[in-house]
Image 1 (spheres, rainbow, N blue to C red):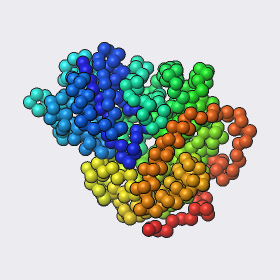
Image 2 (cartoon, rainbow, N blue to C red; image 1 turned 180 degrees about the vertical axis):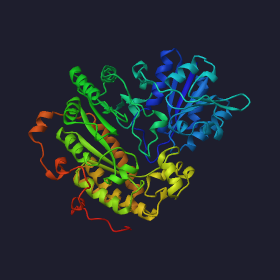
Image 3 (cartoon, rainbow, N blue to C red; image 1 turned 90 degrees about the vertical axis):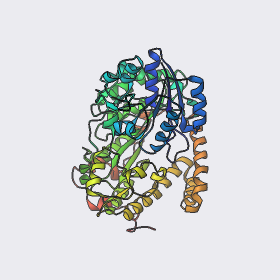
Length: 512
């Protein structure tokens, strides 16, 4: 069979995709292994539907596969309509299709919907197995009846799946010369805002360390030195994570990698960070969300905040930069709690801080909680398809944290976030000047695209000059700032005096 896959153009405020689409690359690898023909178009580069249809006319596929996120999903809906007007068979998958399942076919004229992991499903589909016998598939009969075959078990042996076929993508055009390497799937935790249970499931499943390093080696031999590990829980099995790092070191590869998708602060030790640094890890992101234990408990994070300072300290001890990712407005949050979270996180000195408004995805616990206990500021269909969801406007409010307060909190946090980002990327003086100009709202439409272009060029250039981390040298000059030492913070409520931060005054109740 012939398959043509399309990554729809849902980029939000970003002007260029960072990496190729991993899910499509895996499906392509499985199909090619079994002798099927595959082509891919990443519309996130701005490719028009006209170009798509020109390519389809040449390739003449049996099936056109689409993937896209819940945010801006109307783009995928419109493309389905255009494809069906030309009588193509359309298969949809990805996060949004997995979230809403049968409703996707009810809302569009698509022929097939893949729910969850698709590698085994697409193999059976392409081999001609009767549609009614393919678990995980939702499909439309000739008379229009929609059939849901029920859920499919998640793949247990990830080593049997061939490595993703990134070579089908225009690799030199992405934001960074960076290859994503997925080493595990699934997350057993139950964060209320997370939709991973619909796409990768809760059971943690891992590739062997040997298979992971084989994939690194494949792209290393092709000249790649910069990698991303987008796992939800790379360090869930700490010993396996250590073995991956050991094998990278033993291989002699001088590569670098980052964990921007986040890692659990309670699934690490100093030995692991030392091994990660020796293997080339440059950055880890922690999904902290809030410093308040009651908020963490209500979101079902399953994490004690007291471990966070220690986790930041350990990463810094090994020379690894740290990102702290926070969410504004989850259950139990208030404006005062946001203020305390911002000031305290700044005190811990992570290298990067990001604040996001809480976004409830359909099917998640957060979505259900908002339906029962909060008030929508924007209805879900509107905010999920509004590319300005990145701005300071929340999508829901509570009596304890109003929409005005939520918007004010985001604006205040964004001031610090942008200052930190610009000085990190452009240097202290130029970054401060750029940040000062960015603060003037009328200048943002000019400053932002200009800064993005400069940033893109700088990132491309910096990728050629990344030094290797030497843990021993870093140990010799290890900092001893007791304010960030986790041993000074016990497993209890954080004292009020520790929440003070003289350098960054608490914001007024509602800043202009």
